[in-house]
Length: 271
Image (tube, rainbow, N blue to C red; front, side):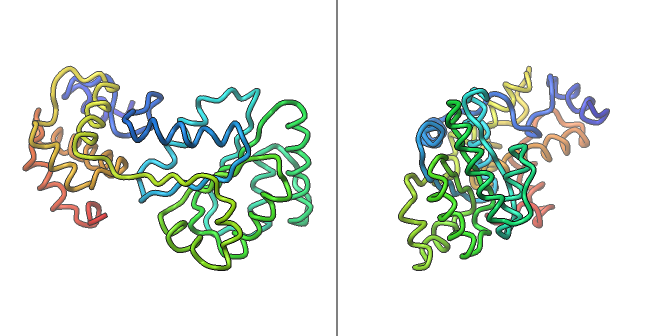
């Protein structure tokens, strides 16, 4: 562990530093449990699923925990993240992720992937493609994915991205053929005040905290500044802990949280 983080952990009697890494144990609430069940259905039957949410709302974490529950011998999940990809870049990345040596032409690579999935299906393995940053897909790429999904007919596809993926991209008349193929839509919502508080306490439980670090009035302040978005909560709480260590404080107050946010308006701006 970094010497500074070790000192911070010793100062607050923490077993490890919270709010930095995705934990193996998720914070579970009713929304998470519901969304996990919904997303997991795409791994057991052919579906087209769209997952949207604000930046930091937990799209990648939801997918991570869903995939983490699967047996690799029975499922092949190919998760890629490309911003505004073209046809060849998309298929080449997919092929490489699957261990396929890609052909030169995009259409040939697409056929390689479809044949590969067919072979795996015959061996009893179910396939799913997850495309992150899907809100950056162009109109031609949306239609290309529709064609790929129809032509393959042997895998599920999950498109994950920011809200405009649904509110703007899929609402265009030219994209109606793709929109009509969507089986499930999962829209992630910010956490409530109670959930934000439970999430923070969950992080401290995982860090094996021995003593309270935030006072009770800190939680509403954190929720108000972060709008209940997990990544923003992580960001604010981590910075607050580091600042408290620098200031040699053992308890972080609501005033400390508000002052930190005021000093970093470029970081803690409006969501």
